[in-house]
Length: 114
Length: 110
Image 1 (cartoon, rainbow over the protein chains, first blue to last red):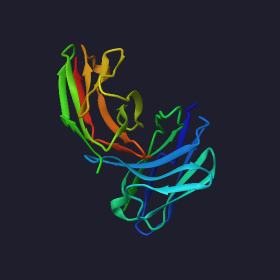
Image 2: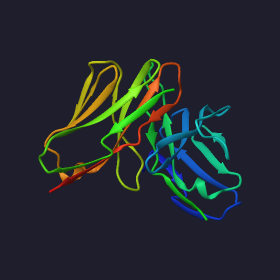
Image 3: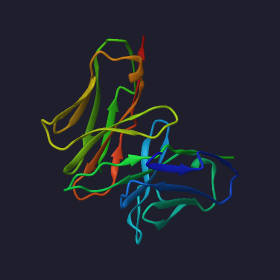
Image 4: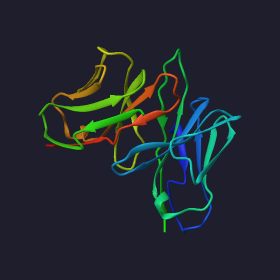
């Protein structure tokens, strides 16, 4: 079974709708992240969380919100979806180890906003 | 501001034709430089982390090197299954996020 899972894998929605993307992990990591990927722009950080009570904005948090329901679950919400939020969304997890840290990514959610 | 630039954007090689991918970076104190492989429709797959200039890491046909300004991913005698997008990312000291480059899309023809 995959260590980091994302649901749904594909989603089509309409402008103005609220949607939620979910991420679950079995790696036992405390840190979780949400990124979006656009062609030619690479991955950009939306939000990250270092534990259940910790939420931090990333580079492009406007229009998004997150919820850390448990150590293993981190959800991303689009409050009112707009077409330029069409992108590939990835969840990642990590655990620091003596100052070193590697992020491990889920399979992604492809979102289309009409 | 931390920046990561990867070149070339795309690279086409014949099977067996060795080459290198470049990742140039500017960061206020490097905590780590990461290489990932991404196949179409999938999440990035971790390859290497480099922490200090002069460090090298190898895995099968891939070898990553690091200087104070750039990193190279050398591909020796590539095979078609090495075709993928290769992503580079940096993490700065005192910073909790990673800054990614746009990637190099590698195609290896048989």
